[in-house]
Length: 420
Ligand SMILES: [Zn+2]
Image (cartoon, rainbow, N blue to C red):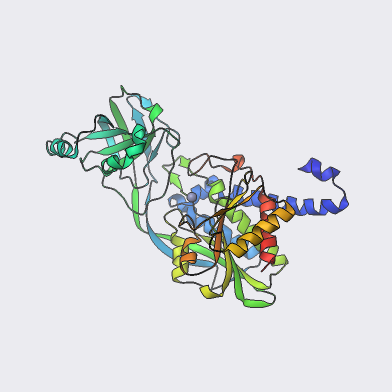
């Protein structure tokens, strides 16, 4: 990037210096949100709260106005967290949490050494036999290892096993592909673990576990909301949203940085706030960082239930969730609902050659735009494509987040907003 800067002539160097500023601010925001101090922006170590206060402090620096007494819109939700011990041995081999296995987000605590019952798609007894065995306490103090990945095609036939009607102490689900974590608002009555198939050899006899969960009935979260007054029509709004929460920690040592998901989206949100703070739009611009997204779009649901601006005054809303690559362009969810706006965005993109493609997608309930769309707010959810396979795992880290097309993506959004 710098070598380009040196050789560019005067006119272009202005553009490049603006570019450098965008990307360095984005990097700084992402590094901060992904730092161990933020603890994966989830339940343990007040990670979600720390991230919220950091974003509020950035809003203040950018001189955004609050919509209430302050930037925070609190809400509560139930959350199952793992803020204690996590250890696991297969026979005598110590397994690495986050790498070899993930605790199912809704797992209960478990401690002890357990014999294993191995089931694959060829030897799972029928339900009647399973219940008979359960009645005879066959599964008491045992873990059931489900080696079902080869049964992907008729996975549904085996889904009931995951709910452990056999009453075993726990279920270990072997996975052939990458391990993917999440958040849960409920807690099972038994332990549940996802494990990479290759780390548990067939001859393994016993597993020793020590896992601690805490179920929080009223976990406190908050959205961060700020706005900049419009230059011509201040009672109409362009709204930008990005969730700042992520998956938090699993035990003391494993945390999920969530660089692409969604520190990158918050970086885009703050870059847009910075831009519109210097160059006010004719409409008021509103910036919302949501909590609770990973637990089921809970922050955006809370906002739509108690909107701080009239929803029918929103001219357009853009939600950013996964903004860190762009090698293959971007996908626009709700493009089919708002054809005119989508074509405008495509036109801006091809005129300026910002991104490889701006791809159309229909409605989907996969991020914080969803409840706005359901309530009649015109909106897009846009995400970048290509470049990374890390997703909801410990590998979604700032040092490997390329931000390949971040600046051109920013310009596309900026130009699109100026068309309103
Ligand atoms: Zn996510």
